[in-house]
Each structure stands twice: as C-alpha cells, then as structure tokens.
Length: 284
Length: 259
Image (cartoon, rainbow over all chains, first blue to last red; front, side, top):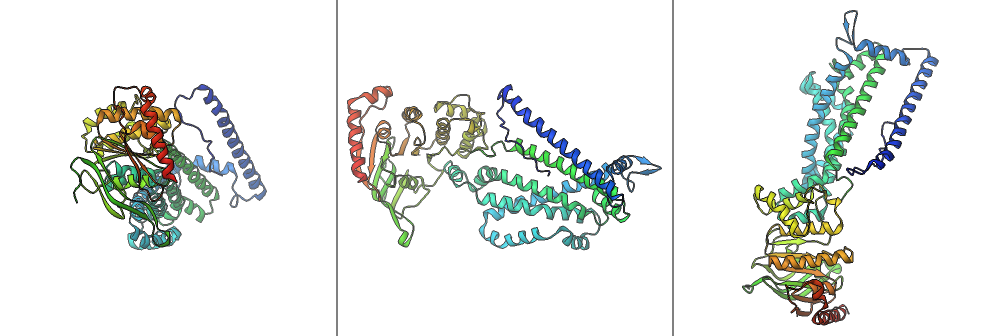
C-alpha cells in the first residue's frame, strides 16, 4: 500500500507554467485520494476496535493517540516509556539503522564491485551472499550476541549484515553488465582499467546500486525490531517488545505506526536523493 | 618487417577470421594497405565487407588472425595514438557535454587548468557553442556526434579513425557534418581513416578511396581523389565535373565489388 506510483514527471527546467499547472492537478488528486484512503482505514480500524470491544486485542485509534501524547511527555514523574520519550526511542533506532546500513552499504559496494569484476571470486562468493540473504536476522543474532555481548555492537552488526546482500547483489549485477560500448569508448580515449571502473562502470551502475540501497535500508528497517529484542531499550523495537510483554497493545500499535511512518519518510528522502544524484536515469 | 617511414598505418597480408570450427567466417583479407601521413583515406563497401573489422584492427581492439598491423610503427593499442569516432556517439550520460570532452583531455594527460581552457576550444572547433554545461541527452543526434568528434580530437593523436559516424543521421545533418569534418581535417592535418557505405561521402571526404569486395573483404579499387582540399566551398566542390566522374567511378566499383 505504501509504494507510491509516482507519475513520470519530466524534469526539464523552465518547461513553462502551462505544464506546471497540468502537473499540479493530478498531484492534488493523488494527495486527496491518499487522505481519503487513510481516513477510510482509520474508520475501519475504529469500527473493528468497537466490534472487538477488547482494547488488549484491538486498541481504538483514540487510545493509541492518547499513548502518543503520554509517551511524548512526562506524566506523574514518568518520562515517556521506560524513561525515554517516543521520539527518543525512535531516534536511537534510527541512529542504529543509519550506522548499520551505512556499514552494510559500504561493504556491499566493495563486495559488489569485486564480485562483478573478478569472475572466480564471483563463483566462490555468490552462494555465500545468497546464503546470508536467506537467513532471517534473528537466526544469526544469537551468534552475534555470543561474540559481541549485548550492547550496541551486535545490533549494528545485525543491521549491517542484513543490509549488505541487496547492495552487493545489485552492484555486482550492474557492474558485470556495464555497457560494453561505453567501456570501449573510454578505452579508445586512453582510460586505464581503474579509470574505466571509476568513470564508466560505477556511474553506469549507480541507478541499480541506488535501488539496492533503498532495499537495504528497508531491510535494516524491518530488522531493527529483531536487533532490539535483547537489551533494546531505549529503541523503538525494544519498546514494542516490552509493551507486548505487558500487553500494552496500544503502545505496540503506536510503535508500529512510528516505525512505518518514519520508514515512509526515509524512503521518500532516498527517492529525492536519487532524482538529484542520478538525473540520467532512463536516458542514454 | 618494418613499415615505410612516412606510413601512419601499415597493413600487410592481413586476414581476419571470426569464430571457430564450422562457425568460422573469414571477414577480411588478405589485404595490404599503407596510409601515408596526413592523408584522408575512406574505405567504402557494402555492409558485411569487413570494413569495420579493418578499422577495429587498426584501432587495436582486435588482433589480426594473420598478418601485420602497425600504426606509427608499432602494434596498435586502444587509447594510444588514435582518436576514434563510432557510429553511435557513445557519450557518457552522467557527464555534461563539457565533462565528456574534459574526461578525454584528462585521459590524454592534459593538466587541469589547461583542460578548462581547451574544452570550449575543442567544442568550438566542431561547431558547437555554449553547450558545455548541457546534458548529453538534451542535444540532437548530430550535435551528439559533434561532441564525440571533439572528444576524439582531444588527445591530439596523429590518427583519427571514424566508423560510419554519420550513418544514423538525417541527410541534411550528415552533409553539414561532412563539410565540417573536411574543414577540421584540413586544419589539423592529421591522418584519418573513415569507413562508410556511402559513395557520395567517400568522394567528398577522401583524398583517397579504397573500395572493398564483399566478404572476405579485399581491395577492389584504390583510387586517389585529386580534388582540391581547400579554397573551395562545399557546393562548388560538388559541382565540379571531376567530382561527378569520380563518384561514378567509385559507385561503379562498389556495385561490382558487392557482386
């Protein structure tokens, strides 16, 4: 439901006010449709909560809203949830996601370039990457805890390992399939092997790499709850887990909403960055 | 087996075969050819006559199955000694127009400050003005091919190799680019080898025209084009009676050679 099908808006600067208004109308309609859909969903939720009549099973939107207010302030000497406000829980998790996926993306890039350019390493390492990709993060988290303890280190490792494969696979495929005619053109101009990788292979791979990065951040996002199952407070995943233990369903739902909405925001930012960084996407 | 001292390109007893076993196809040869320094050689032939193969051998992208290819007295290596223009512009879309030319200058070892000065200069020379900051896809096909020529000229290589560079352009644009290329080649005086299937293009551009037979490509006609290289407007040149006669001769040879 979250994948927006952005209309293929042309980005020709100074394409005139006429086309701007032509674009504005579908955009406004799209927003209206989305608001309407959200409202309908909210209504459905309210109805379901009323029908279930059990806030521990389905909390009402109002109850979740109240939790949002409570967790964002200090009440009766209690600050937010377990001593941290909701934004602080979210902030800690975002920081973990940021660092973890940054490490994973960097590692995935290096691995992908090596996989895409050195055939025998590709033969050896490709099954390993696929193997790691198939593992659910929770499965190797136990091992990481044994190795690195229960502080930040195993959490960052978990997110990095989860984020690495999509970037590695996307990069390897793109590097391997670098357009031969452009590589030849660069060689004709006197480019060295290194020049070719830096000036042709990597730029031509950038659109696919970026898709890999968006995937990686998404996976890191969905793994953060797993990473915060042990000693995860403060952290949005730790908060959700604790709330589940005490059957505070409204806090669980609030946590889920916070994760999902911030995920939407991050993906939007990545899309924006993609548009700015890769203006040649889809051109040749 | 040394090449003649004034020979920019030396091809001797070259045969080129693609594939192996029953898929083996002899694309070219045996063929021998010397291109004197400063001349403009056009290789004409029907498609599949091995003319592009010959150019790729001279560029160093491929090694001949048999025989010897030398440019400036040595075995050719891509990126050294020859600028190459392909049928498609092959510009890098992640670089601006100026960035494409700048990259070529960088590979040629031109220092940074000089590069900034020479980019607009090179673009000027191929008839492009104020396009340095444009994106490559904002240019027309003809303009893109002009950028590709500027890029190939950046290295100041003694040799310029062109593989049907105007084949994909409309007639009017093609004529313009032919005229400009002729002018540029007169100004720079570098040796050029130009591959085409167009008789008109061959006679207009070449100081010498070689017609290849159909596969395997061999020399069917080797003709000097004694038309004036400067001092004439393109239209005046095309109106010369010798021009029409040469066109007829080459056209006849091409048809004969295609079989």
